[in-house]
Structure formats: structure tokens, C-alpha cells
Length: 627
Image 1 (cartoon, helix red, strand yellow):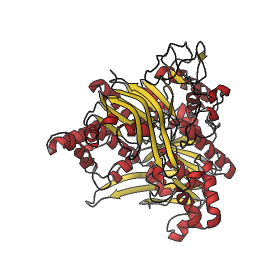
Image 2 (cartoon, helix red, strand yellow; image 1 turned 120 degrees about the horizontal axis):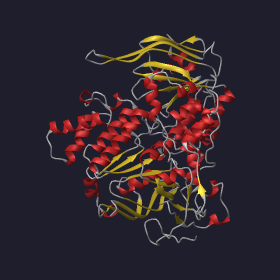
Image 3 (tube, one colour; image 1 turned 135 degrees about the vertical axis):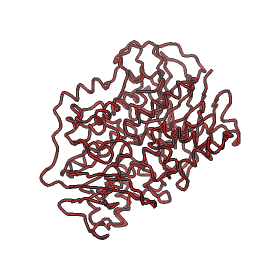
Image 4 (cartoon, one colour; image 1 turned 180 degrees about the vertical axis):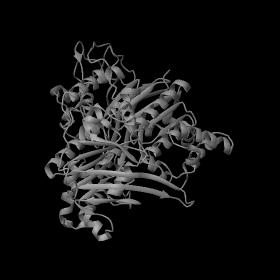
């Protein structure tokens, strides 16, 4: 018997613009102990689907059935759902900063959850919390038990959320983008922890992610969603080695792991449709390179001998299907020479020398975050900055952008020292250096409309008239893949990936000389990620922009960067051209990072499929098999 059995789920969300049909007739089942993945572009309905199951969307109109452990979730009252959440079902949300209360320590928040569902003493609850914090990779968990959320990096806050979800050992863990903000080594640790929980305690895991590489490493089965519909579902090996639906193929081909550094990525063309209207026929038709007249009709669900199921008129039975795997992509990459550093190395646009940062608390103890950083960024160059969460990458970025003052060292921007600059002088400097923050929600004012947020640089610096500002902002929104019609929406009305695009468009507004990108695509699905990376590359070539690119995704760093600087414990331990880092890393820590970032697609590259009969009325198989 399936632990989760969802049948014909439909979720409609009332809005000012009309009813948003967020999820339309989606069915799937998850077996006990299974690792089930849901993937799709931002706004495809992944998060809405699982939040609706748990009653977390006020005002949503939810129809269908959703059975969990023999109980219909949609029939439970609020009290029963509250009892279920946290004890039998735990959820790791996408945005850790908005999920953790800023006025309470992380220890207090974890123990509150324990006391809500378990009758244990205060010391027992503390022991359970500290032990779980250690398991998810929080260093010195005993002392950090009393830390507040703002005292952690983005990656560490996500680990706290995962610890909170795991501490009561529930039957089901729903993980909504649980590794988005984590570096490759910690990501590996978290995935291994989730797998161990499943193997040791029989926990069932439902993971939502845009990261195909994550699912290729851990999922037993994967469901692909688009515009609120289920397009494909099947075993991991079949889906990654030989996808049936053109949309799934497009997602895989958009991955930077499959391309030569310096070459443009090939994203899926167009944008997802508006969910205000119910689409007839195949919802992917406007963007599908294989669309034909029959796609105007509702497609059948085809089931194949390898376990794959796809709602598509395309019949791949008896044919071999394949996509480029990481092994093949690696051969293509290695056949090209190492990329040469761009720009003029004699006059770097940024030169940082001996940068130090020491934080002191009320007890007069100190923590050295940066320890003698020397760094240069050449004109027109993209410099990658990689390292584990908490190593000081974001602190260095904020220092270079002038947001915090270092305790030691000097910085020059275009030959001009930043030491002693006043407020008015820094305002002028910031027209040439912009920063895209790691946490999209935390960097956007929740009470302001996105049109005003993106237009702030124009208003603050007086470069565009008020009359012209709206058209400029809407142009930027369209440039980064946002719907210009959403000019008057608030940040909370966007998905995590869409909020990240808002931050990117704001940084691009003034055409700066330097953009510091702190995890700019970590919250984006691979197709939108490819669009943003191509956009950044084209802007760089057109305007001679320089980028400091901070990321935990080493395949993205390899695609984008001319050089890579590797950070460990507040120091830069290796700095070399990109291909030199990947082919012959000098430091053991660099080798560890590279080993943890492997994109593990299925080893099979060709699968010959045959159709099998579809049983009418089964989960998700609601249309006849026309083959």
C-alpha cells in the first residue's frame, strides 16, 4: 500500500487578476521508504502541490483525493492537520530566512517543535536538538544551539531547517529545495543524511527541486511538472538516460554540465503559460520543438516497458532515446583548451590586498572570518569564488561592495582607493558596482511592489525620469524572464526562482562596470538558469562588465568563469584559470569540492522502449492509450 496516494488533485488560488489554476489534475503515488523527486521550472506548481496537501495555503480551493497512511488529508480538519505536521510529516521549506523566527535562537525553535509533539524534559529536548544539529553539519553544535538565525550563513540556516525536520523522525519528509543554498560538499552530506534516515528508519522522502543533478544522485523515481500539470514520471535511470517528453529533454539539455565553457547554453525557448486560463491540448505545445497539429488535443498518458510514463503524443516505443550524459559532456569539455583570462591584468578593476575581517561580541571574544585575502578582478573577466558555506565568501563580497568595513587591508576600484570614502562618494561608486544577494526574499522589501523595487536604482541615482521608469523596469523584467504584467505584484506572490530574477534585474538597471553575483542562479531551474547565464554572458561582452561570481554549483562556475579562487576558512588557498583548477587541482580541499559536485546521470545512454497496456483509472493514468 502506498504511503501517499494523490488522485486527480486540482488546486485553484484566488487572486486580484483572477483564479490561478496552480495544479491541474495531478496524480501520483509514493511507496513507503521511497525517495521520490518532483522537478520542473519555477512556477510549475511543485511547491503549491505539497503545501496544499498539508493545508498550508489559506483560501486555496483544493479538490481530488490525497491519502496519507490510510487517511485522506483533504478531509482532515485544522486540528488534525496541525497534529500531523511535524510529527508524522515534516517539511523543509525553500527559504530558510523567512521560515526561522529572527527573535528566537535556533535551539529554542527546534526544542519548541519537540515539546509540541513529545513529552520530554528540557534537557532531553536540548540533547536531541544538539545531536541533530551535529548530524546536519553545524560545527560546534553545543555552542551554536544558542545562536540566532542572522548569525548563520545561508547554507547553515538551511541545515538548521533540515535538522528541525528530521529531529522527530517522521514517516514522511517533504523537502522543498533543501540543498539550494548549500555548497557541493555539504549538499553531499545532506543527501547522504536523508538517505541514511530512509535506510535506517524507513522514512519516506518527497523532494522538490530544480536541481537535476541532485535528483540524479538520490531519487528512486521522478515526476516532471510543467504549468501545473504532470508531464512525465518514471524511474531515475530511465528518466535521466532517455527522457520521453520533449520538456524533460529540454531541462536536461539546459544544464551547464553538458556544455563547453564559454559556449552559450541552449535553454527552452519561450516562457511558461499564464495559469489564469486552463489550456486545452498539450500545455507545452507553444515551446515544444516537436509540436504538431495533434498537440492541440489532450495528449494520452503512455506507459513504457522501462517504467516511464508521459502525457505526450510523441511515441518513442521501439526506438532508442538518449541525452548527453555527464561522461559524454566531460569528454567534450576536455577536448577544448583552458579558457584564457579576459581583460587587462595590469590594471585590474578591483584589487584587494590583505583583507581581514574580525567579528567581536559582547564577551570580547573574536572570530576571524577573513584572514589576509589578496584578490584581483580584471576588466571584462569573470572570477569564480567557491568554497564551503561559512568560509567567508559572502563577507568578502559585501566588503568589496562597500556594505561593511573590513578590519584590515586595502581595496581599490578602477585605481581609486575606497579607504575614507564618505557617504556621497560611496553613492557615486555604487553606480559602478552592484551586488545580487544570495537570499532573494530577504533582499526584497515584502511591502513594496516589484516594479518599485527594480526601479529603485533609477530613483536613487536620478538617471531616469519618473515617466520613463515604468517602461524601463518592464523591459528589465522581460529581459530576465519575468512577465512585465506582474509589475504591481508583491515579492510574496512570486516563486523563489522568480524572486531571484527580480534581484538580478535590479542589479542590471544602471549598467554597472562590476556586478558581484552571490549565488545568482542557485534558486533557478535549469532552463531559466541557462537564460540568466546567457544573459550575463551577452551583457558582459557588450558592455565589458566584470563579474565576481560566487556559487556552490561548480558546473555553473566552470561554464561562466575565466578564473577560480578557492576559499577555505577565510583564506584563498588556490587561484588559477578555470580549466587548470578542474584538470589539475593542487589542493586537497579543491579536489574534495570537485569530487562532491559530480552530476551522476544514469550510466545507460540508450534505451529501447515498448509500450505496455495502461489500466484506465489508475493513479494518473486517466486517458486511454492510443498506441
